[in-house]
Length: 301
Image 1: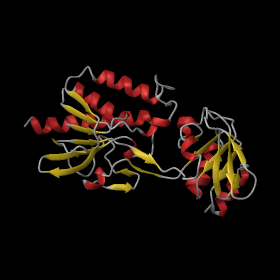
Image 2: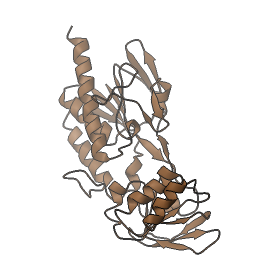
Image 3: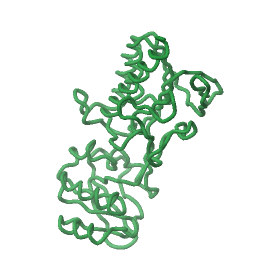
Image 4: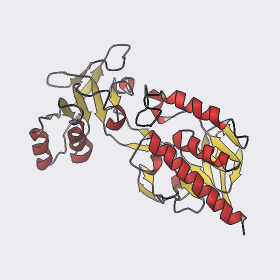
């Protein structure tokens, strides 16, 4: 059994499969989506733990199961076979597996202006459920366009702070109705192009910074929540013929994370819009149980 991805989904799947006495090889190249985060939240008993510490604990616990192995190479290709799949790693090794779980997650698309990447995980966040509490009642900005990605997120953020400004970095693409709602809740819209985020050389968590526009006054904020899209960290699901609900994720059966491709499972951020560590871990467990049940049905004939 092969698992691609060493985040919460892949690690939890490997744990459950190890406890089922399955031989598991987990591939983890060590590039998690939350690597820049100071802490993860919303995970009962682990709220506030640094992501690297959670991964270290998970790996330590997996070491108790001799049938579970971890390989730090990247999987670059996969193909369907009569009775399973073959996968190829970056260094040219080929492995075969009856069932394949993809849990490699997604990659956020960051704005390209100076300062955004430097602030990522410190003052630039994609998830209010993950970081909204820490930024409560602070002056916030929302970066996005359109009624959903811009206006909708700005309205959502008013629950954490009533001092919220929507920055669209060009034409807002907002409907008249959405503009009315934003105005009702006192959300200012800044449509000027953004030149940069002006920050100090070392940005501590919660530090204030300036949004500098091509025209108009600069705007001092404590955090930006953005919605500019994301893409899967690997194209393996598409190569294998997995039905996609859009470029963000794969269609799966909610019971056991099965895809339309026999034997292929997808868990974690690449399978849905609820991008939470605890949800990804739960999906990994669901997929593992589904995989073990499928293997039992095949073997006990």
